[in-house]
Image 1 (spheres, one colour):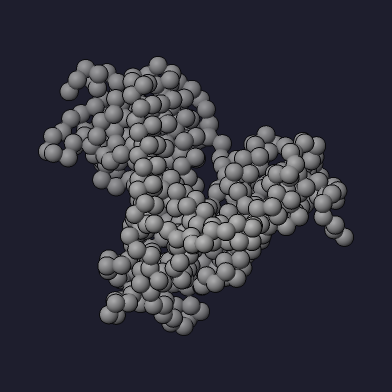
Image 2: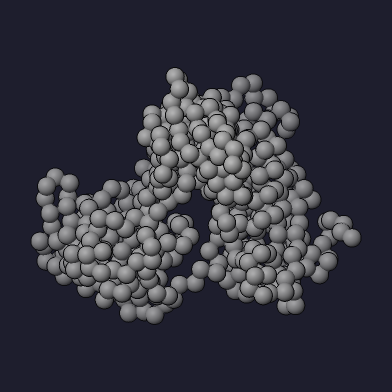
Length: 470
């Protein structure tokens, strides 16, 4: 064991978005940092999550635009996908970004150790290097960032050939003629839209009454459901999958809807039922680390019940989002350096790269009313936005949930073109306590998509310019 490891100021378990950001921020503050990762830095998001799925989303959107080029006066005789080249592009993008993070760690003198770590004391980690070797790393402070794993439902047949998780769904060698997606949340619907664009007939089976996460604005979820079904995607809600069987060359999914058994035949099945905190097998229980179900319990400063140990990201539950984990990492690094910063999740945006996209931040209308707020909801359709018309992507809406008296923006919910980027303005509004008037008197460039936010804000005073309302 080297002196560097013995005397490390901070050890970070896990090199995903929460862990590597914590390591970089602590190094910026002058700490000697050891980062332990059993696979590749970047975690699920960079290697088998956010980044590769967005590569597929971007390319399939381009494919569809090419196929629809005639309406724009362009002649593209044949638009087809070259799967090997697409997979190579996906891999190269991931490699570049992983390499970029590794270079940042190296430049800031963070020591990266490959291996599986166990917390054997609050200030000591034991690391297996995969070849029978083991080393210990001691540190004055520790940040736990072990991330999450795919949730596996208790469904017989999940291990059959042709049944895949989101990781397997990223490695597309052939396009199935028919795909059944078990789970109508973020992961399931993003993959449903990707495979649909590639040519699959897609069916989505969701056990809850609505698609998308429970915290999604109800009007947005209903509108997306309608648009997807209008395109030909089959969506069954309140449907519980019972088992999967192979019948010849076909996979048959047995489910129950309203007490009646239903079946769906397909070539491939995607299990997309969410993720669980990755907290097993790392010595947490043996040390008495306090848990909240599967998640690590933390306070508002992300401190655990163990002395000088913090936890961040998916492992602490709540929103399992890379950008939320990155903020956690910064907060924990500041506090490990003696700070007293508290986490503030009010302005954490949720973005879903379906077609059209969904984005939200803050409270939904139902949540605001449940909390006793007097609210006024104002909205503006993208069909009245010039830029959306130019793009020929005018399905969708911007909804603002405002405090009725002051106009303070409590929540922003969007469905439409590029709203995953537009939500940044909404996140800033929620974080700073901005009002609808603040947005309405902020000049927005023309013709641009953010003008839909401007018009929705004007609607709080019933003063929207480019739409007539009674």
